[in-house]
Amino acid sequence: MRVLLFGPLRDVAGWRERTLTPAPLSLSSLRTALADEDAALGAALDRPGVQVAVDKAIVRGDLDLHAGCEVAFLAPMSGG
Amino acid sequence: MIIRLQTERFDPGALLSAFCNRRGDVGAVVSFTGLVRGEAGGVEALELEAYPGFTETEIEREAQAAIERFALLDVMALHRIGRIAPGEAIVFVATAAAHRRAAFEAADFLMDYLKSRAPFWKKSHGPDGARWIEPTAKDYEDAKRWTKDLT
Image 1 (tube, each protein chain N blue to C red):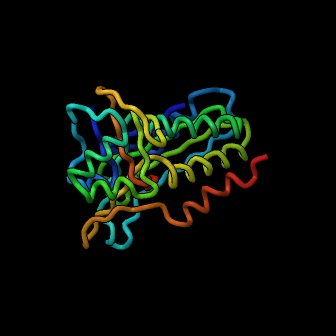
Image 2: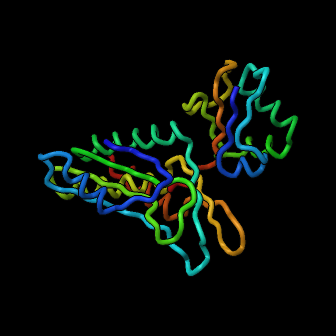
């Protein structure tokens, strides 16, 4: 599973992209895994306005993930 | 429709000429070019980040909405990504319609979208370091104008 961070989130985490193996089975377990490793990132991901895209489509709430998917956490967008 | 993200500089005049020559049934073309403001030395560069493959799709959806709403015959949006210096063009939008009003309004509509809701993340680099930029209250107000008069 590829995990991508955009905008200020990557400054909080200190990374932009990671591959997770084994892949968490759901979005909520991915959030938990990231927060357990880095509490500041976990808190930043929970902030209002942060959106999640799975395979480049915005999703809401929890959902099951597959090992080959790409999950992107999108900080509030700046516009151009 | 042409939607493009690129790191290279572009020539707005050349883009406009090419856009005008794309078809024969157009009566009006409006273009907008946005430049990076230097803010009297406060901005040394803007750094624009996009999510390739996602950002273009989102802009395409809004451009399609503009085509339907304003009966556009063609539309183009080009946005720079990466590091952009003051004075350089950062965004180019062009709209083509049968008559001028639709072309003016559609260009305005698309720019309001690009400034407030398009998936970009923008960092300003200056003498005091770098900071992330969010849309201004005015950007959100401008974007809201287009939801008021929906019938």
